[in-house]
Length: 322
Length: 303
Image 1 (spheres, rainbow over the protein chains, first blue to last red):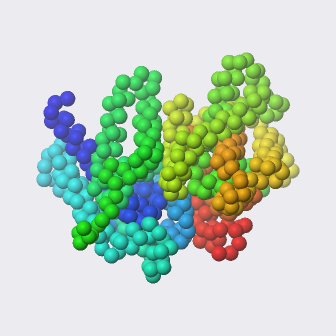
Image 2: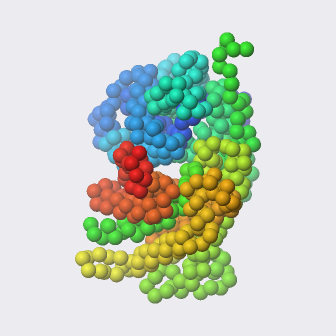
Image 3: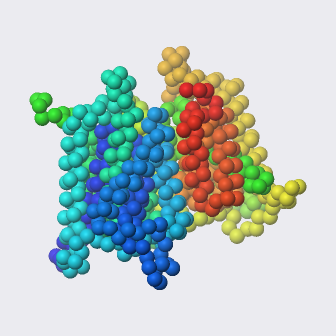
């Protein structure tokens, strides 16, 4: 491969890892700082992607209207797609939070798992909603007319990294505020936080919604990167499990860790493709399963031997404490 | 409609086998075991290996019992797979959960570890058997017997009900009559109290995994006989299993039995109005309703 090809490959790798970093940051709010066990990230991924797709594309007309069905098509700019995705994901998080946040952590996990599977089923079966299993195609890309199409990824990389930085700063700011300290108090000891007069349910709900909105933005970024989405993308493996491994590997409770974990695990994930090239021909078709097996084993190792991840949590978040 | 209800009872009894194991683990070891569905698939695939490879190699004949779709091979494979999955469940506990317990890890970390184990088991199944649907007996016609009220039931399904019923009765006797069974119930009730009364809780935990794994394997195989084998079958069972467990109150095995039947019937009857692919969603909606209105389940009393 010539040098230009390698750079283009690295850029696409950095874009995907950056999008996963957004998810890992969202999960870090929920799990890392509040202890909320969300294993339905794929659900928010899916809703974010579809919302942004429908906000930014026009309603199909003419001959296309016969082949492409979607609930609405607003033809708004990219930024509105991101905001719409965040808004809808926030509402969904609110609806999941109501029955589950007063109960034990496991219940939230089971409910989020259920919502992710249910949304995938709905998008698969209801053709009128977003074109069923064929999905939506031809999603617009922001600023695409600035450069030649083959160089567009550089622009998208800058957009993704910019959004990662904005979300990072936003979470850092929030977590260093009194609000963030309450979240960590709830994570450490719910009873004593409650005795200090904090409304546990409300704080948990805010954290769940905040994290879900960030995940929605991640979903939107993914949709406009690939330009085509279908329900088969948002599986528990690519949509939930790998993001958990990223956060646990980088260090939950640490935003830098979340971003680092996303890049490290995505690098390992892509790196294993070269490994499976050495497999005998008969096993080639099953290479993805072998790669996921490696990721699964990696998670178990992290949980057993390095639960704090690569960076570990920053214990002190205030500049005023020495 | 009556026919759908009957199918629902068959499907529900399979859910019950999984849910009983899940509720035992939930009640005694106190975490949500997300690998339970994949233990069911493991059982189904171990039996597949026995029926199509191991027992064929030994030379066990491949004939059927009367109107049933299987014969001696499955009769041998069934208990072997139950023991094998019990061993897998115990091994997972030894390799993962016991170490996490020793480190005093939070229950959520154990649940996450079980999620990882679920993916590992499923990937192993996918690596060895591929992603296609498989059958214990491919291409066999499975005629149904016609009962009054126009209900058609396959002989296999009647046998499934008999097997589930016998397993539940055996489990009931085990928990009520044996010393180990009593120790398990005591541990589920109060782990600390059980520990100070001299109960070896690590042995109880091992036994719990053994029972849970064995029952899960039985459920998986029966589903494989009734419908088909698929690497994702266990994952699709997960939501119904949790719905049944929560409906029947966590830790209550009779509750899990009832919960499984209710969820199974609801899922099957829903196919009269909804696309069959929505079956997992039906279990999910029921679970959310239970969480909203009776989070402790039908046997849990008021909050």
